[in-house]
Image 1 (cartoon, rainbow, N blue to C red):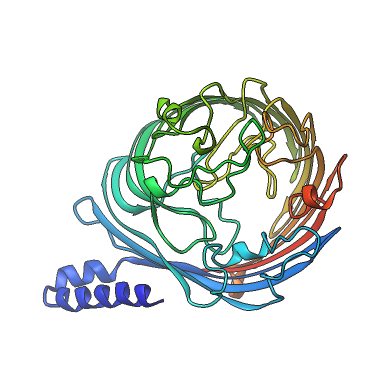
Image 2 (cartoon, helix red, strand yellow):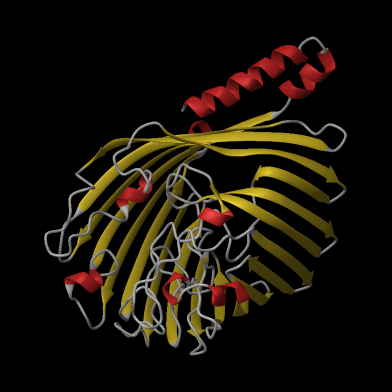
Length: 442
């Protein structure tokens, strides 16, 4: 909180100084203030093992100046506190593991700290011209399928670097270089050379534990995107270069009309040559691994109803790897509490039905996998089992006097198909989870 107070004090001093020049003061005063207040309650019932619950409250305050000769300044800060919880540090008697999910509402790197968890979220300068812009600092990064905010906890992923975007009619060309990241559920900022490996390192293909934290002096992450829309079609190509780790090329083509939407995604990965210089267990990716994935989707929509089916295949050319410190992969089968990262030679099948009308909406999504074999680390980085999963999400947005208030209820049921051994399933599968999120946006 002290850092946020310091930022706002500096802004106040700047405003006071600007008051001597009336037009500048008015220009700053006409900037936009926005933000949100959020309360998040999460409870996980592990079928075998210790159960947990927690409630966090916090908010975000953002200021963005009015544009002056093309230039704009922005700053935002985010904070959170614990309202209540059981002992998240209490270890399960059988596995010896402590809490995973509820801890992500706070700071996973400081497990005794539940209060005054603040972070300078954004601090940037942006220059606009026509439909284009360039920006630098702690910046809001546009959507990408691999690097994204993934705003599903109290603190999303945040990024520092530069970004440029050019739009003309239905064409978009953009790209950037990111050199610092504050991952979701963390309050600190990490340079790219100390970032990768902060979360679970998983297993190497030979079954030994991976240990790549602090072994990759990466200079940053480069992203390039080209998008083109034409009538009912939309094509996008991304390339994400993670220095000294891995390169991912992603191509996506979608078609839509009044009732139908369909799409296909193909992604291909190549390891960086620097990985060969490292000891086997210190590598993020092995030289012979070339992750590939193909994902397809068909959706029908009418009168507020949507029916969707999707399929993703991870090829046997290697495990598809995406650094968990950067966001969540956005294949058509991706959903909360499930991702493709770390899998190869496997299939995912999804079906969903959604109904939205006025201020109310409900989504029911089902997911199942085939080909995930526990103990086969060659294609299974995090030692998962084939599973079934059902997510039910209900949303209500208020209007009139309460406009800006939104309530979301997410219920997750996930269970392994084969192995229900506590060590394999605990906090990976075989659980029921309730998430109640109350947001007030202003």
